[in-house]
Amino acid sequence: MADLECPTVMNKLITFLSSLLQRVAESNDLNPRFHPQKISAFHGLTRPTISIQSYLERIFKYANCSPSCYVVAYVYLDRFTQQQPALSVNSFNVHRLLITGVMVAAKFMDDLYYNNAYYAKVGGISTTEMNFLEVDFLFGLGFQLNVNPTTFHTYSSYLQREMLLLQPPLDHHHLITSPSSSSSSSSSSSSSYKSSISSKLLYEDDHQQQEVAAV
Image 1 (cartoon, rainbow, N blue to C red):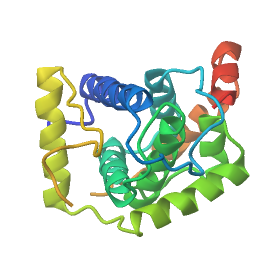
Image 2: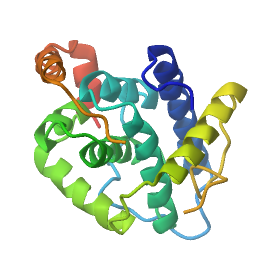
Image 3: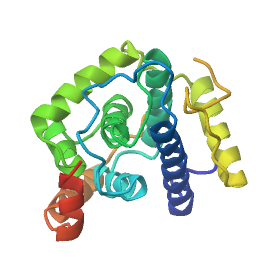
Image 4: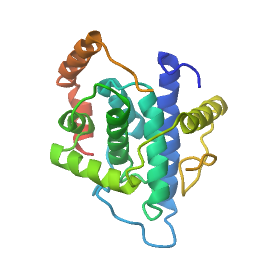
């Protein structure tokens, strides 16, 4: 895949993933499966007011995890939906699945990462709920967290191809149609940057704070 460290590439990736998840969620909202959909810990009582793209952009802005984490999080979400066929991605659970997927990916991929309390604040949920979602997500994955180079390349190539086409595919059952089922080191300057980002999080504009709090 094109260099993930490039801001332009990452912006396109965030936009594409948001668009894909938006399409899948809206389709599943309108076309529920024949059997009753599973209500899980990720299911909110109401649809969050913040859009999927704004939410993912917020995660990208404050999580400061390595770019590869977003590809790995995408792999995890696809595995999760395959392992949990009764749990379809929809507008009521996609935000919680996103924040949990990115957090778990960061913990697996990066040497340095924020704790659950920080991710809970970024995601607009309580630390207790974040802890519970992490456990539920891990069990939902069957603790299959390893992403080998071949799998990473397959998903990265798929994302690059679809980004070029600018037309996300739609599959109600899985988030990706083709695949089946390097950690980035951080320096002291990275730690300083994370401290700066953490401070900025406290001053997020009130409008988005209210939207995120509604997740």
